[in-house]
Image (cartoon, rainbow, N blue to C red; front, side, top):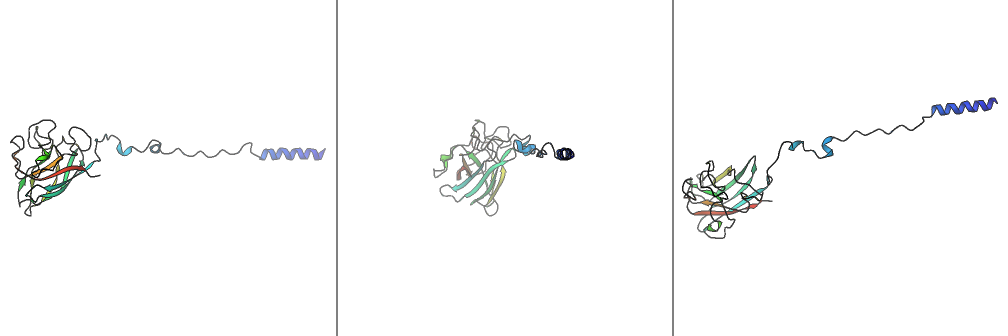
Length: 204
């Protein structure tokens, strides 16, 4: 009887020392909120612009009898398109009309295949900061003493790049003229003959 009681007590002690269930596995912390749907913090409040990542290049080739050439890059900088690059083969200290034209065609020896100024809104020609001007109007180029023009400026606020809209300059022509643009004579500013022509192409 005593042995039976001792065995029963031992069984009760073992049961008391053993846990009724295994400890629960630790719950991992939730992942950061940014990882649940992608981290958009850097784009918060930024709507962006169609085609804002587009970059275009324009390789200027001389028209017949001229030596003007260069390479220009066009990309968005803030709310405007920016054109940068170098044009060489100009006369020292000369000034030249510089426009985007409606057709990306430089096949004609005199550059006439590029058509007229790019002007989808059918506005009057004028300075780029004037209320009325073409989408393709730009400031004149000015050559240094070596006949080189360093280009670094904005395009018209009307111009877009790579969005496929009516003001998209991708695939259009770019012309350097022999004379300065007077920003008054219609429809071309009396800028004279065409010294060089390029097609604005996607750089990618």
